[in-house]
Image (cartoon, rainbow, N blue to C red):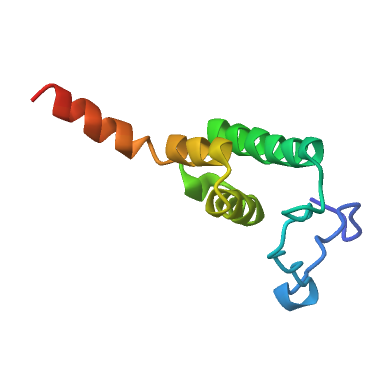
Length: 107
């Protein structure tokens, strides 16, 4: 029989409203355009691509497997026309352009 006093502490009960989530940032931490030099821009793009590939390898090769903020940054860079991010996004989508071309060659 267990004594009435126990050394087990109760788990703290938190309500979801007491812990607000931080808002998702809509802008790049590194501004686009003439305000940054090429090396800073390349480092920023490399950090986004490196994180994207890491998450895709662990959680599955889909755009949905990325955390929301990383997904926003990757898609913004794709909209700005960064070629590396466009290739990574195509890789996440399963390269639909290349898949269609290869199926046409065999026909």
